[in-house]
Length: 312
Image 1 (cartoon, rainbow, N blue to C red):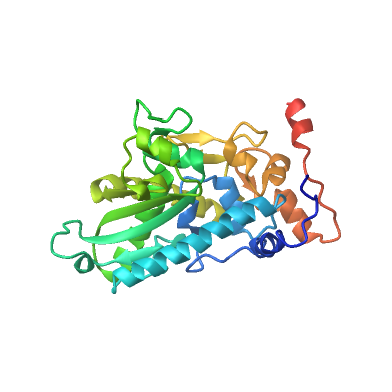
Image 2: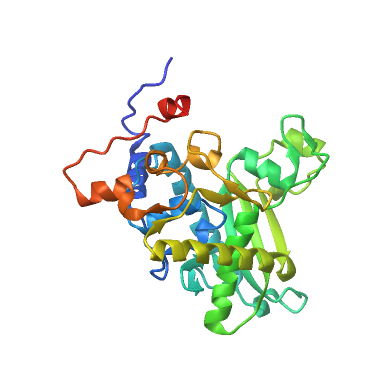
């Protein structure tokens, strides 16, 4: 028995979420950039900031993954609210001139009780697939053992994003946030057999992980990213698309290549436009997307990535 190529019922929710995913949401406080862009590509941020339509919109599979993540976020927030009565959710803030966003939860220190010494807490949750989760916690799932080098912990970009959130709330409220709690939930549980081999006795840890990050670790990352994003904001303010630069997993600046050598480009919604517009700083009026915006009658010709790669 084979599955049909055109589902009638199973795909309905996926299609709805796919349609909703095509709408670009505004930033939390009408800024040029958003916290969630932390360590991301400066060129991609520029395209979004100028209001261009993606040349490679999110597909149905991507919309499904994001939609499931949103549902999990909302349910986790509800659970936090039942446990911590003074918790606040989706707290919007602005850090610097160009960047804003909202956190998953802000929980004041008093809600944790007298034994808690971590001060006020900002919480961010990430849902993820098996590979990312296993890398964070240090599990070799195929072999059923712990990795020799241990877990990598949360991505530095996730820490920077949460940290910028914290700095923005501090600035707005005149408070101090000492601890970031970053949660990770995976879609596929570690099997009972492998959990037993790993001596993983807490069932919750088969699907989730939590990291408590003190201020001395998160603040430098947040400040460095705010400085980088300020430069991106300046470029956009002056009418330029920023270059194809991002921050790698090792915390160093990397140049991105839209010809398929970087995963960020494989999933980018503006990959063809980036190929057409070229590298470096680009005056926005010279962008192929701006020309299309100025002349709606034109038909956009997406770049052939394979052809462009072979012609380099």
